[in-house]
Image (cartoon, rainbow, N blue to C red):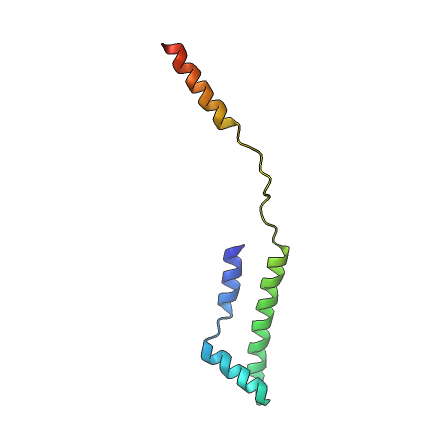
Length: 84
């Protein structure tokens, strides 16, 4: 999921200068159709990422204890005892 988020955000990369230029043109009301489409692209990408984050469910904190490893250790110890 993390890779998917990063990939989506990288698709809509904006340089700092480009972002500042867009903001200034939006404030002054002199934005072009290309500017409007670029802002729309950025907002859509942000919305997709937010939806992915909302749908994400962290792994369960309640994991079952691992008993198998301890059993294997005990079997090995008992085998060693029997060899003597």
